Length: 533
Image 1 (cartoon, rainbow, N blue to C red):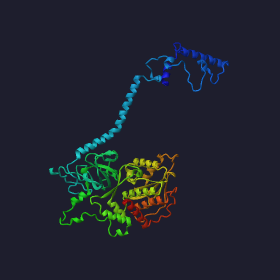
Image 2 (tube, rainbow, N blue to C red):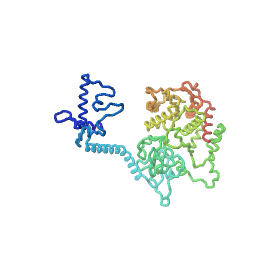
Image 3 (cartoon, rainbow, N blue to C red):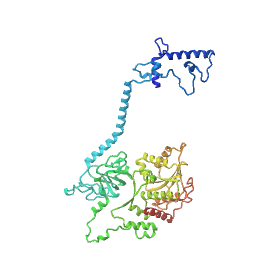
Image 4 (cartoon, rainbow, N blue to C red):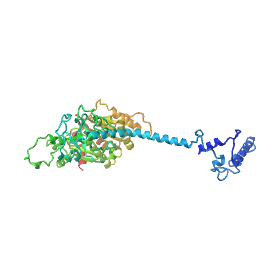
């Protein structure tokens, strides 16, 4: 409206002699009265008042607060300034119809270019995946003759006979995660590059926010065969490139390059005597020996006894991963392997699934005793491996967790690096992070420090964060090299049960002496009881 008014004024306000020209007669009368009253005001013959000023006298009406004065009942811009030419210049602030059409066309072209720039990489990736599948999907299973991990297959893969044309890959029939070997086929010859877990897959399965491709399966990579780290993934991925990039992460893998370890063991076994009594094959052997069982607590023994009756074909137990506790949906479940439970009972090194289940127990404990000052993170989302593969994703995860727990005293972050567990306690109010390390060393934790420092500075706290204070805290130290997981669980248990109301953990742990065997057994009892009930 203002631009239009200026356009009208610039085109109509001057007559041929250069003087201002107003075509409307009533407006001219008001204009002359205004000039007259201004001269009287300058000569001291007119004294304006609040509701009786120059404009109100010129209009012939007293001014009232909140009123807008104009000439006539239906005065419009055209009545006051006249009708302008339809052709209006851009320099006057009014764009012509042709100029507007040109701007719309430019906007359309820019939008097309932006969309193409974003979509082309994704389209190229999908095209590469399609070409790979069309070229490499064979008509046979992998490793039909058996092969050890890391060994190239020199013999060509045999083809199936017509009578077996309807059989399926064993990987398509699994109902729970299974240990497997993963191979790539760079020169037409499969080479085993990693060990991991194959997960049940359906048409609705998503992997890293992407739909599962045809004839592929969802896998997680646990261990890379030495010397195979730099092999490229069998399928192009927008986030990862090499085998080393996806350790502790999920990926899509062609079915014919995945072999279940139990299938290999069956293929490599020699025929057994058929006269063996098959009545004994339905029972699972105890997960611990008779030398360990007497030293376990009541709930641990109960768990061991119950697992004897667990189906032989099932190697893991699935628990729901609560988004409200772990703050992500990269996977919906926690898969606790039988070997993980065995390690817990045998006091071996602990896998991440044991730590995750214990976090679920601690959250239940917090709810039971109305502890509202403590939050948790998911160890799979902040591990050293995850930091190396997707640093930005870890920062975003920390920012999300800190925003969710900004009113908490402590956020407990279980961090894994180089086969070692330690606990990082995030204190948002004091802008500090306490390091509880059961085996202090000159370990370089620069990556996790950098991600958490950046996350701190990205979370609104009402004040500018100048420096994050990283504080190594006195805490009990492990006596040997494999108890770190138990000590991290005990640190968390003590913080929840003893120190949830303190402002900081400086001096909370009075001694660095090792925990007693009773302290560790108490943890295992809590874990087993929660897992059972």
